[in-house]
Length: 148
Image (cartoon, rainbow, N blue to C red; front, side, top):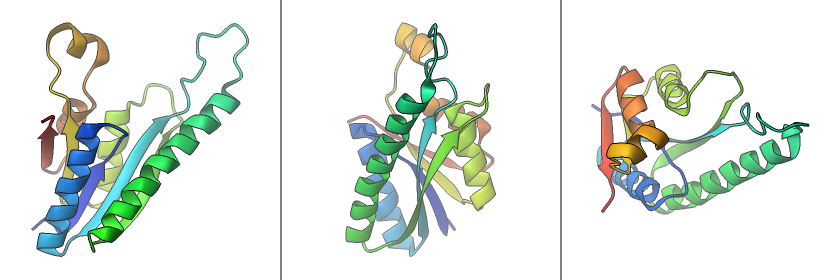
């Protein structure tokens, strides 16, 4: 059980906790870990008068690769089999949550590990919840790691 674990990371403390939990689970179960980070490059500068999304998109992708590089080092130190993948959202109307759930499905993950900030009220309404969206869209179990 849980031979293929996908963990979604970002640059937050909660994302770090999710990564550490996934590494620990993968080590205990001798599972393969897939570390993903999603970037939305289609909606960059959408409202600008003269949109030139290329420079900003490149920065977003570079940041995503930096996040994954840091996660790679931690997974290697944890002694687990792993791979990384940068998910690029390039279609309008596709959410980060849907992209993560789709990647997990395509990779045949047995479990998704993702951090949640536990927002409530207006902040949840306006900011949304990627973790909640993943839990709704995923076809496999999702382990939500809360803020400390």
